[in-house]
Length: 336
Image (tube, rainbow, N blue to C red):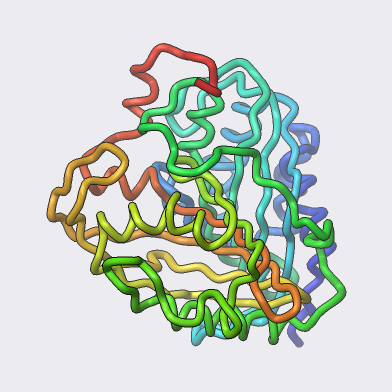
């Protein structure tokens, strides 16, 4: 018989795996990770196969890099996957918090407090995690270390806030299926756009999927923005100018839980690099992009959207090693 998904217990287990005493790591891992689990991590960590590999290639290096490390969850939801891949999944927006005193993923440390933001999807069977997809926002960690390797961000850089309603961790109110319906309607309409205005049908206005005062929280390199006009100005126009043939929505997972929904593709998007983007001249290369989106829905509209993109991997496809570029820089004030 299939073990019911206990999201609260698995959330506690994931937190313990990061913060427990060193001697307890293997025991804690056995409690929540299947022996043959597969972790797909953002570049440059990539695929780790098996519990021992996950401990050696991700858990221990993260703990060693962030002194006093702990998880700070902003969103933690669960649900049955609506996509053909099926399964029961967890999805979270979290920060791994600690003093960045050791190198991580090849990135030189700052010696100061860091909030490493992450988007995470976990497939669960028989009470344990069998598969994970995790995007770590390494460009933002570079910014915090004072060695940001890209031009000034398009939007406003900030610590990812939790939901305005403060109910994103294990939500109980709301209809998850209805929340996901709103998101799927928006994604369907978002594909087509006017190349002159970058507008898509039914995004705003009386029939729109987005709330008037929507908040869009973007990753390092893009930053965050406010309302649809800010989203177009600070992200969409630059992205669609550089990648006008982009096609998205190739998702392995879509779940809804209460007033929240989450979707992810690995990769989600295919596109051609046809225009300059964040300082990188158009290359004409065919590219892919790993994507995670987390949404809060209120009164039938999307009020907040948290976005994780694997830009370390995207820029590698364009011939730019962000980690090497960052390490070659002299540290400066992270706000500079």
